[in-house]
Length: 85
Image (cartoon, rainbow, N blue to C red; front, side, top):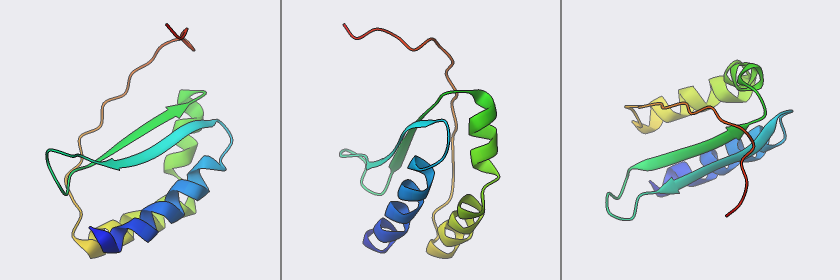
């Protein structure tokens, strides 16, 4: 997983610079080493869709495959901007 970290950092920086990206984070699960959890917050579904079509995401897909990183489960939640409690 160590070899993936600089590649993850690269895609995180590029994604965070995109219009509409509020948050984009990767974290390794403490109880399941090797499981990477991605959390994203976007201003709109359209901006998320645009993100998925960016060149850096295509490159990241190739890099993930070369590292043998596979298996994705995606859950999308929609809501308002929320209020901190």
